[in-house]
Length: 161
Image 1 (cartoon, rainbow, N blue to C red):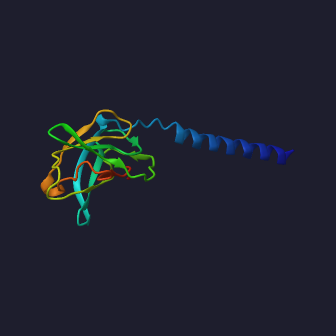
Image 2 (spheres, rainbow, N blue to C red):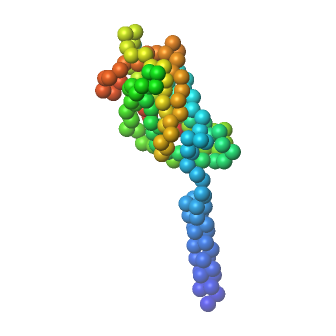
Image 3 (cartoon, one colour):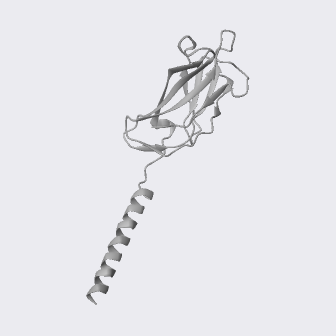
């Protein structure tokens, strides 16, 4: 009898512990990082080849609460507000990211460039699972001009912490 009570007590404790762990992970109620919680920036990355470069697009949580995000930001290069080159997803796997206040996640933009190419002056970034974009200045002197209208000329990676 004592063995049976101990077994039931341990089973109940294990069940309570696993339920608590499950509830903690699933019920964290951490909101998604919507555009109003995010500040975007772009910086020059690497030169990968004679006409291939990268830039880092960083999304920083500017709110006072932790938020979560996952996936690819929408990215478009534009000229004076007119749509231009859309970045195609590179196919890499994305992972859920929780951003505490002040923390950032980044995606890599890879693009072809050259002297006679289309010159963007704006980068339009839409955080994952959002519809309102953030507009950034594309400094072509630092980031380069972008080869336009070529399949795969501009690709984007998923966000990573």
